[in-house]
Image (cartoon, rainbow, N blue to C red; front, top):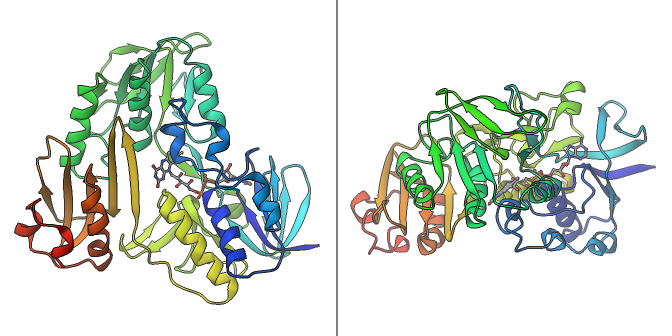
Length: 404
Ligand SMILES: Cc1cc2nc3c(=O)[nH]c(=O)nc-3n(C[C@H](O)[C@H](O)[C@H](O)COP(=O)(O)OP(=O)(O)OC[C@H]3O[C@@H](n4cnc5c(N)ncnc54)[C@H](O)[C@@H]3O)c2cc1C
């Protein structure tokens, strides 16, 4: 039997695609193949209230487990797509089963990048990507621990904030000379550095990790400056590797994720790709990027649904993201990479404040640090890349909606 829409992966993007197809009246067969044993769930709480113990596992699920069957969406969980044969339109699962498809949609996300230094596989070294990772980490947090977080990106910093809140000793080690270097401006990086230090996190910038030490279990992290930080637990948050090997082996272009066009089409006419694993043309980036966010996963899934339904729409959604650290919410609109000018609304040493990014006089991004109103009002301006007066933009008393 041929499955009309076969989705590799059962995460955020896969779930949205299946739901969108049904909402838009698609009546064919839909199946998701998911490597994890859970029905589709949201990952953002993993480094936030799931790690802190304030959310139970079933409250991560995007829909009640029975909702999938009610919509005739078949879930094959605990299964991995191991190989793809585009010519036969067939996938082979890791257990040897073969399934034929009409459309294959690749929505496999990524796996945590591992450290390459000695000691990377010691017990007590953790990654943060799935429910199982957090459950394993929580199992190690039975008493106050000395924790080294490697990587000062969003996930590492969110984990650091939660773990400090739980009373653990936390050191963050970041190779760049500032936190969140890949995703934000120096002014916002500085704010988060001060915030974490104020909460008692020991942040080491411009510092790498030479080796993890310990016999069987980690006892310390030896840093590039020659010091060794004692550690009962090490959390590695240094990014993800897109899960695209079966597509690359099948001959599809996978330079950094699987390459797609604005309609989520790969170079095979029956294979689409969406979410964290899709290297796509993004008008806000001015080129090909992979974006790791719920917004991107959901909006690309909707675009892929339209491609399948024969009503193609180009992907042009405005990127947005959020991060919760301590009692602070950061909300971002647009992509700040490549901005020319930074205009700060408010005092950047104290939240709330907003960093606004201009390119050629146009507003291309916002980092709203505790400024929900700026986020809500500013999104439309970023979508339009509105020309704004920097002097009025800089005045927090001027509402963003009046700037258009
Ligand atoms: C801890 C954490 C916190 C985050 N916080 C935020 C946030 O605050 N805001 C935000 O916007 N985004 C956040 N994100 C990012 C967001 O969760 C991802 O961008 C989103 O989950 C991507 O969806 P996806 O469907 O592409 O991938 P995923 O949700 O990762 O789903 C992919 C699924 O495919 C499975 N899979 C992989 N290979 C195969 C295979 N060969 N066969 C079958 N199945 C396979 C994987 O096991 C996985 O279950 C966070 C992510 C993490 C890990």
